[in-house]
Length: 216
Image 1 (spheres, helix red, strand yellow):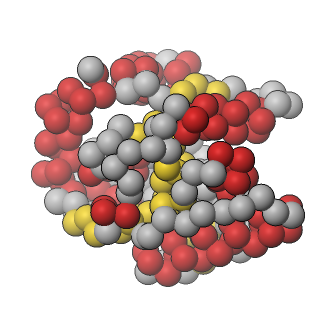
Image 2 (tube, rainbow, N blue to C red):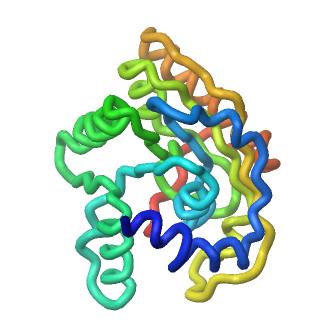
């Protein structure tokens, strides 16, 4: 219930007012069944804009820190993550990667939409960085199609190191779904790189063949 209340009443109208999102290719997202939505990552509100424009519910795997942070911001983050049913994963242990992939597989096996930013963290400078291979590995494991999504403008609505949101135009482009068959680790890496280069091209950003620096 909280998910839809946030989307349509408490938060969604504000996001629409601030970003006036232009959505392209939404028909590429299947109306039912498992699907992976893989997007570049520019701002903390990227996942909120994806949830806003998708008619189906989308679930992300959220790092444990979002559920344990203190202070007003921490309480708000914890409430939003809990209210929207995001899956909490501890990424500090030795089995963190496997636990995250297992959680993603469960979302898809139940017929849901799993949302992921393959870069693993927000871009520090607006460019698109090298992706982690988990998105392709889960796609091969579950057979779920991957819909690439190019985001632009969210970093202007929610600038890095700024507390207040701003007015700016957001553009969200959904590309045709892709299917991946089980293959070699080398091919998984190549498929991930191809996905990220495509996202860079669609978003009009330069591609950087290295992992982005992690920051909160």
